[in-house]
Image 1 (spheres, helix red, strand yellow):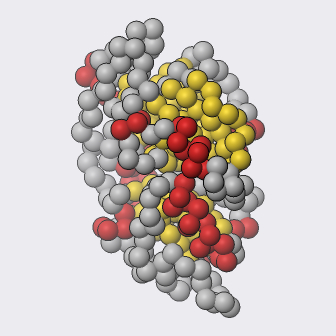
Image 2 (cartoon, rainbow, N blue to C red):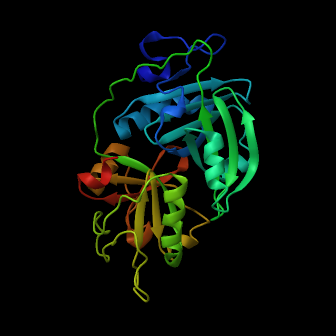
Length: 303
């Protein structure tokens, strides 16, 4: 159990909300761009243990926790790039199909921006306890929940807590696309996340015994086993015809780390060699989820 399972420094949440409620950034209008979070849907009884796991894995403390009992017994917690969505009730099909959660500076501004990209609004703006939300479908078919945070009456920013130590591991949302679609996917997500692709060619190493991944470009025609990739904010786009057909058992996350061994040690689990794209190793995570391991130098795995 960690100290982040309650409000930092013993502070209580806003009047009328649980004492576990805290946000280090209750007003998302101060963000310079959307914050993309990997989604993990879990049972409410597992939330404390899952917070502790991701704090150890990523070397940071939770920076928000929001119990919302009137919304289906829901409780949210964010640790680094992971949003833990815990509920007492079964999740709906649309909740399970939603690939991304984004904390945005302005919901109206984000919807206006996305309206020029072919994005469809599935659930329009709705006031919720943290602020306001909407659900959209991106042009590639993936669903995203957009949330604008605004402070509750009497709420103050919670102090940031010092993490258990930098483990040199970064977790990203992972999305596989056909190789020929990678360039278009990069351009769309650069627009949606309001940030440029940050991956240079040969930044990340190839899986053992395979051709090297070579940056944010699709592989050359006919190149067997070739993979292109790009990191856009907290999103890893993998351009691979092999990976694009993994719908039956997708790998939702990627771990960027100095080595495969470092990632496996931080996750506390044995790797599954050769089960990812191009034979890249995959490590199991709690709750039946998994992450593909991408090894590289410090510039690759530090946000």
